[in-house]
Image (cartoon, rainbow, N blue to C red):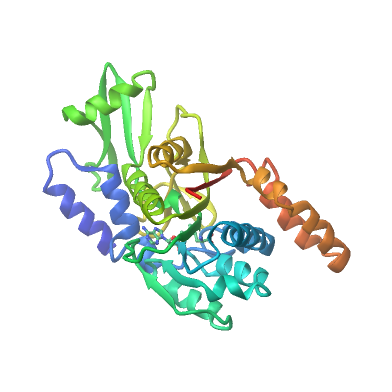
Length: 344
Ligand SMILES: C[S@@+](CC[C@H](N)C(=O)[O-])C[C@H]1O[C@@H](n2cnc3c(N)ncnc32)[C@H](O)[C@@H]1O
């Protein structure tokens, strides 16, 4: 409730409400916001992610990252995970690379994480691995000049978005307070010339959802890789061709939920515009190593063979079902996309 009051007090100082992305930022990243205070991941929490569904997810990513390091870097490097959640992806990668000790011996490990509760989980999860020092940071800001392997799962969907509507003129969605003292959407006409000239490139769209913050964050990564070399790997839900609808959603207890209610109590996310990310990578002279669906990536790198292997070994239906969930086109197979870029 304290967070809602804080946002309302800010809105009261403004004539036209606050921009949607600023509202999302409060809801997720204020010190009383969702990502600072809640434990979001798990069956009995708000959502479940791929590493929590099957260990095969992290094992295959681990093999992929190791192969890249062995063939293209083979020296000291930064191993950086963005938003490691409960630490499951990292621990599955580490398990799958246990016999290749040179990989971890050469790595400076960084976890970029803002949630104190999740950091506790991560520390517990990795304590039994023999690793060089692991450093936690709350933002990406590196001083050293060695190559990097930077990876993430469901990280870029957390960034705040702005929403625009075109009807003769461009309008932007703001959040205001209605007569019942509840949050409500409000559309304000855009007059800022720089923003208008950007939006006018998309005049054929009635609506536009953009995360400038996500794009800036990704650009920073691309510049860093371009300068010091390395690889960036991400999986997230998103799209390539511009879609004519908004994707912003609230999720609480595994169900869709209104983002304007119980602020700070639920996850708010949006689909990643991979077209934007690819353009940014190309602008920064990075090669697109992979851009495909989650199903295509994991099928190409052996998930079905792994399923067969485990079927023979354990005869575990649960294990097979979990793999199917990751790659089934009606579940996570198509919705989630994999993007890998590098300069090596
Ligand atoms: C949707 S969860 C995914 C967690 C994990 N990667 C997984 O697949 O299970 C997003 C993660 O990113 C963290 N996070 C979100 N935005 C962040 C930011 N701007 N900086 C650092 N961490 C962030 C969250 O606390 C959480 O650990």
